[in-house]
Image (cartoon, rainbow, N blue to C red):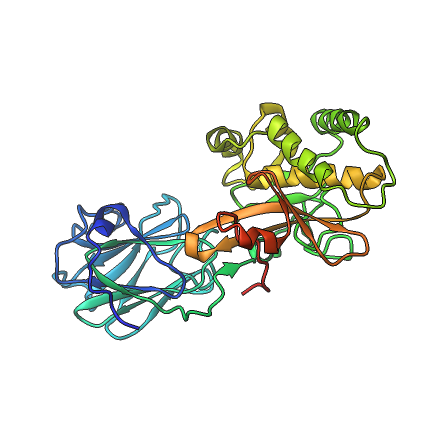
Length: 383
């Protein structure tokens, strides 16, 4: 491991997105990032801000208090996600040569973490001259702004770059809530407000609830009895009746392609419109029906994959397909992104077929790897 020779001045303005196990080394003797932050003003401190950290959706500021007599340490880590009514102090001293771990399993008495912060998100180490921000393996990204001298890569070449633990994180968040129900065979991830939490091992998506990475952002219910879902399902069955025969013994991949095309017709990929639909439900873990995205004619990969899975289950129930249906999602560390898709597992086969409306892809994981532009659909065990 070695520090890159080239510094990263652009990170002062835009923030550098750390890879997993990567460390950013910042100069604490240089120019501050900018004006005193909200966190600093909150405590009556008008001191230089040496770094801004964005962990998921939670902002922290590293403050230079070397000229402040009331502090015995040089640096403070202060909560920049200002909350007027929080009862927590919102800051922690950063002592020389004493690593400080940031995450929901640490310093809970100090910070009112946003749920997008992982349990062990990042670690800070100050040596008197430099500040090292070491990214762990968080579910959501870590951005660093400041006078970055360079980075240290902590990933070995053979380290798996795919993480698949969204649903496990959501379950951990829900387990301590009064509206969470314990898991059982038909709901392996438990219940939220009497809806089974949807994950890779769920026996069905019907009436299930699907969380985004941050459980307080969106909880989509596959409300299959809604007028909108019944209508699009019936229309799809009418469309295929003349082309396919129930009880076919062979899987016709053209039928899976028809699912992909139909999902894109009734729910085109549109990030901006999707955000407008979802925004009213942020921060409340409010349930939003998949029917709302169908009605508005917009969704992103997670909504498209739920609709695709719903249609695939309908085809199985009506005899057009024989097999199982699932939904999957992962994070690709190398591209700093996450994705979701549906899966069909033909009866009597161990070869799953990816059904991905957002990528307009139907095929195997191996085929996707050969087509280098495709998403990496690997699904390792959760880290």
